Length: 279
Length: 279
DNA sequence: TTGACAATTGACCAGTCGGTCATTAGTATA
DNA sequence: TATACTAATGACCGACTGGTCAATTGTCAA
Image (cartoon, rainbow over all chains, first blue to last red; front, side, top):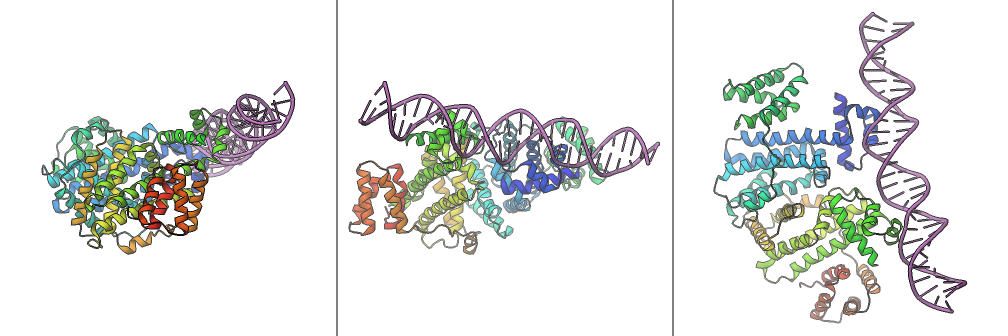
């Protein structure tokens, strides 16, 4: 299994440098010191590799931001923590961030397109819930504009340190962008994005995952993990999913146990939303 | 020569739909109803085609915005006219805008990268001069942040109607974004982008074109045009460049004559900057 | 040491690509 | 009609791609 990880690590490097289409499997396997045949023992195709990469990183990214927003109690810290977490994640995985920015715009493959669409929808949900917590119904008219401004700031300021390799003052950046966001939220009067407009490029794909789907993922995670606190926590959470007996603090603690494990991030995100825990 | 235009038109359609790399020359020639060999009578390679496309549209785009900003007398209309012109151009050439957004991020080819860099630099100059006219030295600290916010708004709101095909209320959009920009300019206090930072991803490429270079371009334009008012204007402007005799209004009138002709946009832009005409 | 099994290899395949060029079709002049 | 010229064609080329699979190597229990 660590062969899979090796391939993913080296592939991310090459994709970031040259792009997905421009990188051949031969290059990847040369870079790994393995044969071409060995690649196909770990991934059934080149497309399967990029899908695995996107899932691997996007799940971590989405979960991190979601957790940060949900676990911030003081509303005054919300924007700061959000931006800090966003750019911290981008910076930590800057090679993947490069791939994301390059390929997101031109995923002609149906499966990839839907994937990006889904993760985009999740991110919008996180931003939306943050905006609602911040301003409740004060900015009903301009809510969607504010969300798009936040996304615009994220994108533009990301490019600065993703494509140019600058030292990054995360604290200053988060303070600067949260100030900009607050200024906009409190002064905007002319919305451009209406409710109907948003619905016309609707998100019919972003269905809530059913309990069965969550169960599947849990069982899969449990199966592929060695004995550990994380594994026991997963088993307990699975029981809780089937028949709730534990109190919220206990459930929350179990989630804290598993969320640090990279392979459990997705399960943690789904369960947190399922149990409607705010932190 | 109109074969060249046919190929460019059809290629833009296909590139917008499928991307540059994913579109083969065979597809383009099939779509044009010509043979593969005929393609190579008009362009020496596939790369030469995309370079020609980028130049063709970027020159028009840059020139349009520059003209709009320079010719707006009333400072109160400046932002509105700027955004209106930007999105009007994007909308008018939405197929090319798609290509631009997709390929700009991943131009591994040295020549293309420098081209994008150059046009980006020109666009920043236009925005910079606009910001300076609007706020002079009131916002020295936050000037670059404001510029990046403007670019962020442009990018994010472009996606709305470039990738989803929505009806576009240009007036509302321009009003909405210019309000946002003004709010930011007047209230921002925490800059993130410092002078030193900007210099570290510097623009050493964006040299002023020399008089000789402008002359070259003028002569090239004159040579490939049939007799017309535009051609005569070009000849007069060439003389003016060599030894200035005409008064500013006359020069301005000549520029007005040529700027509507697609092939003269570039010359008009260069000359306007050379003669330092404000409108 | 043997033999059964799993892991790994890289030559090979069919297909696509950008690009070339001998050949052909079209056209205007004499 | 014959000639001279250009415009246009598409079969062909070499390079490279993602993917396969018979052959080889490595591993470990008997």
